[in-house]
Image (cartoon, rainbow, N blue to C red; front, top):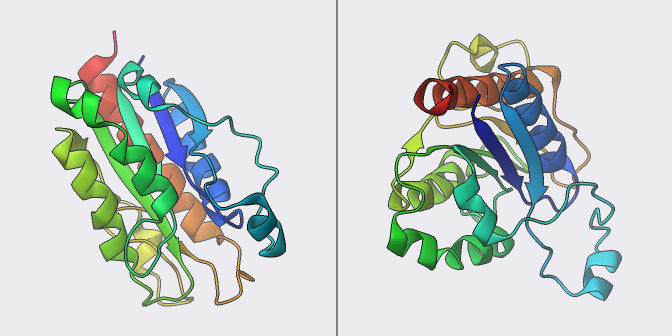
Length: 200
């Protein structure tokens, strides 16, 4: 079976929860799945005063590890309609992998969170996906086979470009059942695709 990395950055824990759901979906296919995060770059005193979630269990990834995986699913919250500096800095260090074509043909996907419905979910996903395409990766989004994202009964995240959640202006909202189902579904589809391409 394929090897899948769910790589995320989470300030307050919303993306950590979504990443866990993506990993669950990928594992359901029999794929070997690792859940890792990128390092926090905000000074500790500022992170503590800002109530960042600093006790996340996932180990910190290194750029060199990326080429060991058949699929990489990248999750990060929005910062003014783009990925945050923590994730951008990590990917910026992957120039050596890009130069060698080390990620060509691998499967990629993205997921995100925003404070509000209209806080830039799709544009943030594309800011991640653009990087993955420069690496030569094959992108798998969240198609409407996850019909929960079409719900009119409640406010939900979810786009055809990747799983999303809405955190609220103060981070008071946690990922909903439908949003977590979307994250699991995307993880499953990405792992299924990687299994077809790389599984034995």
